[in-house]
Amino acid sequence: MKEFLLLTPGPTSVPARVLEKTALPMIHHRTKEFQGILERVNANLQKIFLTRHPVMTFAASGTGAMEASITNLFSKGDTALSFSAGKWGERYRDIARAYGLDVKSFEKTYGEAFTPREIEAGLKQHPGARAVIVTLCETSTAVLHPVEAIAKVTQKHGALLLVDAISGLGCDPLKMDEWGVDVVVAGSQKGLMLPPGLAFVALNERASAKITASNLPKYYFNFTETLKMMKKNDTPFTPAVSLIRGLDEALVMLLEEGIEKVWRRHAETAAWVKSKVASLGLKLFSKAPTNALTAIEMPNPIDSGAVIKVMRDEHRVVMADGQGELKGRIVRFAHMGAACTPADARRGFEAFTDAMAKAGFKIEAAV
Ligand SMILES: *Cc1c(COP(=O)(O)O)cnc(C)c1O
Image: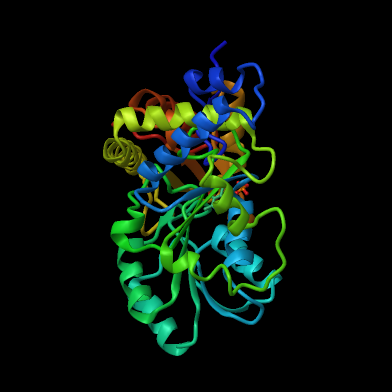
C-alpha cells in the first residue's frame, strides 16, 4: 500500500530529516547545547524571513502569532484596517476586534485580491489608521496579495503593515526588509515543513517602537520579555524543544536549496498544476493565484467532498475541501513545502483526474 501523500494546505508533509530531529532524546532547555540550537535557529529564521530584525518563536499554532501581534502592538480603540479576502483575513480581523481595536473591515468577493489602490483608498478614508492587516497567501481561496506594492502605500501613510504569511512563507516571495513590511507572522506546518505547533512573529523597528505604548493585556505572548530573552539565546517559558530541533533542520534544508530556488520550485509546480487543471477544462477559483496551492472550481453538480474522498480512499492522496461557504465547491490542491515536487504534483493530479472521472466529469482524451 502506498503511503499517504499530504497535499493539504497545512499541515504539510514533514521530511524524514526533520522528523528524525524531532524524535531525538529530550534535552533540557536551559543548557549551552540548547542555547546553541536557538542561536542558529534565530539567525537562520532571519535568512528565510529576509530580515535583519529578530524573528520570535512561540509554542502555538499560527493563530497565536496573529493574536500576539495584536495584543503587543496596539491599544484599545486603535483604528486598524482589515482587508480580508477569505477565512484567514477574517480571522485576523476578528482577533483585532476581540481585543477592542476599532476595526474597519474591507472585504473582497472570495477568489479576488485587493489592489494597492484599494488599500490606499481605505487609508485616505481613515487617515488615523494605525494598522493595515493583509494576508500574503489567503489559503481559503488560493489568492495572493501584492504585498510589495501594498507596503509602499502603508509606508506613505504611516500605518503599520501586518502580513499573515502563515501559508505564504517559503512558497510565495516575501522580502520583509526590502519591501518594508513591518510585521510578518508565520506558522510551522506549511511552507516550513514542520509539524504544527510553532508560531513566528518578526518585527521591524517601526513595529517594535509600538510595543511600549500598547496597553492591551498580555502574559504568555509578551514581545518585551521574548525579545529580552532572545538576546541571551533563551526563552521566557519552556520552548517546544523537539519542534525547535526540527526547525533547525528544516531551516538548514531551505538554506541549502536557497530561498529564491524554493520560491521558484513552488512557482514552477504551481504553474504545472494550473496548466493541467486547465487542460481538463476546469476553472481556477483564484483570480490572483498563489504558488502555495491551487483552488479548483467544481463544475455543477460535482461535490468536492466526493472527489476528495475518492482521492483519499483509492489513491491515498489527501487534499482539502473549501472552507465555510466554499465547502463542496472547490478542491484545494496544495503544493506547499516538502511535497512541492514534480513527482508529488503528478501523483496528486493523477488521483484528482481519476476522482473527477468517478464523480461523473467527462475527461477529454487529450489528457
Ligand atoms: C493555516 C493558516 C493560519 C493559522 O492557522 P493555525 O491553525 O492557527 O496554525 C492563518 N492564516 C493562514 C493564511 C493560514 O493558512
